[in-house]
Amino acid sequence: MAIEIKNQTVSRIITSLAPYLQGKENALKLSLLAYFSKGHLLIEDLPGLGKTRLAVALARALGLSFGRVQCTNDLLPSDITGLSVFNKSTNSFDFHKGPIFNNIILVDEINRATPKTQSALLEAMAEEQVTIEGKTYRLPEPFFLIATQNPLEHFGTFPLPDNQLDRFLMRISIGYPPRDFEKDIIRGGSKRDTINLISPVIEVDDSLKMQKEIRQTVIISEKMLDYIIEILQATRNNKYIKVGLSTRGALALSYVAKTSAYFQDRDYIIPEDIIEYLPYTAPHRLILHEQYKGIDQRELIQSILQEVKIPL
Image (cartoon, rainbow, N blue to C red):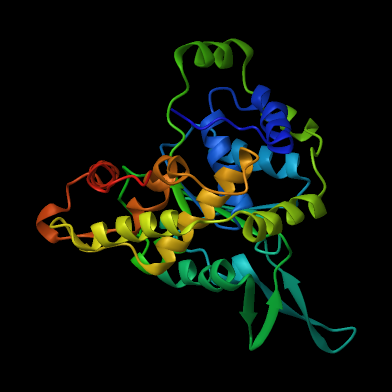
C-alpha cells in the first residue's frame, strides 16, 4: 500500500502533472522522492512507456532547466560536459557548456554509452561539478540526473559498473499503464506537445529550501537507526549476497525515509518509511554470488525485510 502524500506543495505538483502522466502517478511520486532527497534516479524499463515525458513534465512543474542526452556508442564525454572552442576574435578558448549544465538532465539509454563516457557522469553525480581540461565548474543548483536503460536489450550495450549503480539513490520502473488509462491515452492521442504548457508549481528557491528542511528537520530516532543497521547487516550476512549494502546505501535509505516522512508532514520517520522504499533504494546495490545471479533482487530484499524484526 503506497504511503499517502499529505504535504500540500508535493500534492499540488502531483495533481498538476496527473493529466499529463496518466497511470504514472507512482513513478512521479518516486521521482519526487529522489529529487527532494537530493539524489539521482535510474529508470529501468521498456521503450515507449513515457520516461522522457516524465522527466520533462517534472522539470516544467519544478521550474527547472532541462537537458537531454541520447546515448550511443560513439558519444564522447565532451558531448555531455562541453568543450573549449578557439575564438579567433579574442585569440583565446571559450568554454561551451554541455547539457550537463542543466538542473534536470535526462541521460537516455545510459548503458549504450561506452564506459569512458559513462564515467564522465560520476563526478557530476557525486560532487555536482565537472572538471574539464584541468578546470572545475560547479553545476547549477538543484542538480538532478535521471538515467534510463532497457532491461532486456543487451546488444551494443555496456552494463553500468557497480560503483556507478551505487551513485543512483533509487532505481525504479514505470510499467504499463492500467487498462482504462491506456484506453484514454490511445483515444486522446499523444499529449507530448501539451507538456510545454505546464506552469511551474513552485519556485526554484522553494524547492531548495524544502531539500534543506528535509535533511535538517526530520529526525531519525535511535530505534529507527538500529532498524536500518539491522537491515544493513542482514544483506551482508545473506547466503545469496556476495556484497551487501554499503554505508552509502544506508545513507540513501535514510534520506528517502526522511523525505517520505516530510511528504506526510512528519518530522520523524517510522518503519513504514523504510519498508516502503527499501525495494527502490537497495536491490541495485547488491552483488550476488555467481551461482545466484538469476535471483530477483527485489524479491530478495522483501525476504530480508520479513526476517528483520520491526521496532515497536
